[in-house]
Image (tube, each protein chain N blue to C red):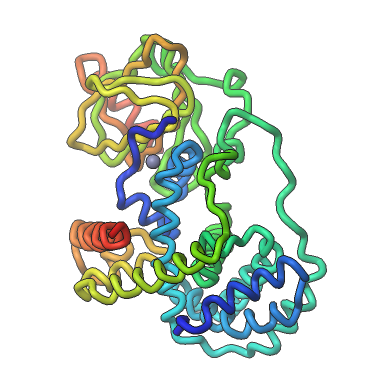
Length: 217
Length: 182
Ligand SMILES: [Zn+2]
């Protein structure tokens, strides 16, 4: 069972409330697809929403007219979604990327590291898939904002901590790190950021302004 | 307030699931529709859109009634989750990312009487804990559930620093989580 590294209570709470930015919610949904503890935690906090809904004073409305409108649509109401193709990937992710990760148009960013940008669908956030070859490392970097990473397949380690499939990592501007894929095979991750990364080291300082310009435009 | 009626609302949803009972739907609609509309108006002061959220939510209740498990959520909490998801669909025009359903053997719960009673007790306990929170924490917690707003927007609306909003919500959630584990 995976899920040794869980998202913070703040993220769980925002997801229960419905206010978590969608790309972060995607990362959490991937995590929860293999973590029943966090699914249960969300369920417990959703009760807050039930209490809040229950306390609300009823708003003025023409209830009978709206009821008639609803009743007349009941028969057309189609039932549940069509079943989706079986896949190793969580469904939340399959709605955003094609199922076969190997066939994505990966863009090389460093030796053994490639990325695939998922559409830039919420202002200020970027979501991308990372493919890190066994033993390869992401360039050493820190962050200008928050970074949320969830492991889709394989594993990486970061400062001696190992992240396996389903594990969730949060980093902010206080964290400088260099994630490295373990020897166990290719590591795929989903990484969500709300500001460009800041590369460290001599080469990093050289190419950082270029990355930054690209990320901002 | 729900105490007397929550079990009845659960039973109505089960009746919809089992018998496609339109009268049960009407009873549920009359209770929840004005609250869902009030909920919608908190995020956007647009009555026409609020009426749409009522329709979307209640039609989803009709469609998804078979998936409702009274041993897992109270009627009001379940309808909150549908309404929250429909609000995201309607206002952001995107689907909410959801976790895959648990595999066989994982997360098993039997819908026994005992579990339904536990669900009602958890609801009352959550409400009591929320009422015991310092009002400065309870206020921002309610805002985050009601208004579809990230912490930054709550900070802008209340004039509080972002860090203060975050820490109040975090404290409130931690208190609730701890209180619910006892
Ligand atoms: Zn977890």
